[in-house]
Amino acid sequence: MQREDVLDAEVLVLETSKLESRYAPFAGAFSGILSALATHPLDVVKTRLQVQFGRPRSQSLKYYGTFQSLALVWKEEGLRGLWQGITPTIAGLIPTQTIFFAVYTCMKSTSLSDNELSSPVFIHAYSAATAWLVTSVVTNPLWVVKVRMQAQRYTSNPWRKYDGLLRSFQVIWKEEGIYGLYRGTLAAMLGALGAMVQFPIYEAVKNSTSNNTCFDNAASVSSKWNDISPQLSRIALASGVSSLLSSMTVYPLEVIRSRIQVQDAQTRNSYRGIVDCISKMLRQEGVLAFYKGMGTSLLRTVPSGIISLSSYEMGLRLVHRVNLYWNAL
Image (cartoon, rainbow, N blue to C red; front, side, top):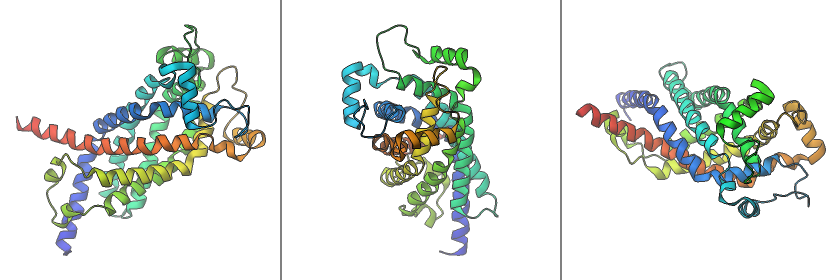
């Protein structure tokens, strides 16, 4: 490739990144809704497996596998049991995906424009970590409500403690105050390690499996983004691989976060923090307790990651297409 072509390609990458940061909030919200609807029953089962106490493979455990847990929830609670917490999940994923991708693309675009930051791995890891930290602080209350609702067995009793998004917020606020809504925030923020693993891998795999035709000829940004068929196969591959590796890397932190978040006013002394939670889980349940529900989580996380990132990429192009059409009127 000639020097002029390389420079043109770098300009194209930068301009594409600027376009992405402009449309990211809309595409992020779109991807959040789709991923929530596609995998929620598995998310319910994963939460039930994570928060139940006892040593793995113990006869006293109620839930001990993905399909057994799905069947048991269906038998005892019906369809509504499998969709417990869907409202806070959607209410949480929309701002989560919107904020995350808005911050991520903004940081990435800013870093790409700085000639001193030349390492793509560093740029993507730094941008993803920053986005994750901001998102964790802003949206943690919604995830506390989601975990409480999912962990609670569904019944027809009108006096269920966590019954609906607003009522659950009111109960937690009344009994535990602002601290209750921000339980597990530190553990959630440590999940930035997963984002630092996922997005450099995602960007690298996505770009390495691309034929790079648009960069070889330094084609226009407009023609690249006007294409609403964003090579879904390579995006699916990149998102699947990156979601799998990142989930396996930080899964114990997810279990710890769920354990802390599920505590209410009556059980809040069970774990006094991350270190206390780790210590008690090791002593009482063994090291395998940190991997409870991991199989279910991977069955959910990988398809959810593929759906989320693929729909995000398609959403970017859809919004761009609509914007071009609107400006042409």
